[in-house]
Length: 206
Length: 160
Image 1 (cartoon, one colour):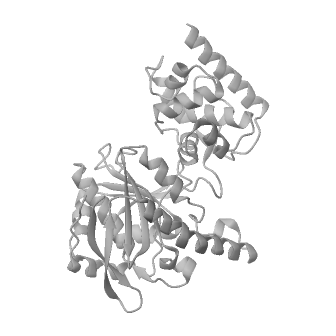
Image 2 (cartoon, chains in turn yellow, red):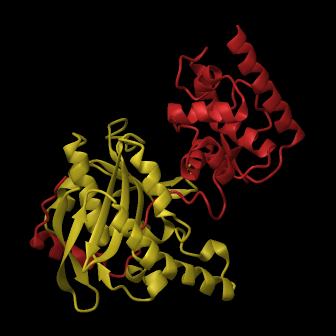
């Protein structure tokens, strides 16, 4: 497992802090997920239940089991896992699939891409759960990792993903990806793609 | 795999993420499942592999988790198989499902698009007919009829 030095930004003060991007999800990362994320997510579920918030209004990924997702991905050579840590805490997890989909944008149709199967950030980095973010920058680092993986595979930076509803503005606005609209095969989630040109632009300083 | 992220790049981009939720991926286990029921005009030829598995599972009144345990697969993988008509399953999973449902592995492999199909247009037709529905519903009489026709067709194809 290799580590890359990256940065996160402390929300509020916008102070840059050193962080690590790992090119796998280790058992230690899963232990951190179980011991720190899951209790907070369980608490969120109980809070939403007691407040009688309709389930369709809950954060959409509260039920995700990263233990199962990781176990599943370990049996498939075409899946690449990433984890981000900072200060000894697990800040984000991602699963990227290199063979699941091909590009749908007319200019790229049928070409290989790196498909981001799942992305989650720690509950304390989510305004929807914690109210405020402790760190931000996890999303752009994960997208950058997927682009670099795509380039390594000869896919020229092409990536694709189905965005959770609450995250769509991040992929279109912050990342500059193309929105292809709701996908009826994926719970009507909005599908986004990034072309090689868009990837090059994203990897340059804004 | 190492990536080279400069502080300059990060600083120019990071603030744009502030206040945003980050997340991507399938929702298969909450809300409206995007699993596929059988359309009214389904036949043994145009039903997809995923729909076949869904019918077999629902006939037993099993959850996806229970089938995952029986087939030694993951719930995510099976949810994907049932929901996505373009999903190409792992051969080992198809063999496990054939064993669980006591179906001819070769016929199920063909249904899954992992072996030479009798006719390539069948898979295209199957994808065209895929549609969303709730996944816990018991089989209707029409669905039961289609399932029996699929099973008969698979057995006959294997014996031929």
